[in-house]
Length: 265
Image (cartoon, rainbow, N blue to C red):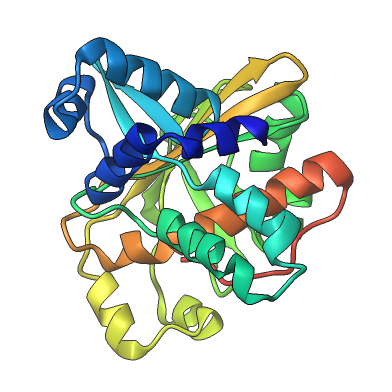
């Protein structure tokens, strides 16, 4: 937590976060141009922001794309803001809300968290119905082989769609699959209006990927949800759902408990 406050204390690093808030997925050159700052200085600031987990870097070929990461502010909010409702914490609450919302001009949602567990246990948390039912309220029926169909069961979801498939499954390292089908049953369970349902049913199917990277006693989990068109309603919806879902997964694996349930896209 000390690293987060240290990173936020510097105005140049706050400007970097502002830039990524306005447009996620920028490479080093784009960030340098936007700040009128030397490449070496930006690199040092980015390193501190990454160390504090306020920025996540995702490889795209030879370049690294940088995204704002809401997880540290989410942790601060859960530790203090959720327990105390005073005017003095409203500014931090607003920052939490801003960070959890999807950055403008970005068609990708990226979120990184560190969980005190093992890669095998985290993989189980992502795939085993015993776990997913507890923090997500649904289960996946599949053999977790690349190209295999997936059936989403629970939270208003049921059955298999030919487009719901496993895209990649490298146990304890990487998992990827296409997102679920938006049905009237799911919309009713999630409290989604007919108007919104009609809108999101016209959008292309998105996909999500989980990268697991062991780091000592913890595992770095990076979630990349992409495949959205500009102005996607689904992207706005999942941007608010993923932080709570992943916090609940983290809490479950570390303590055996879960956070209060929420609806997710």
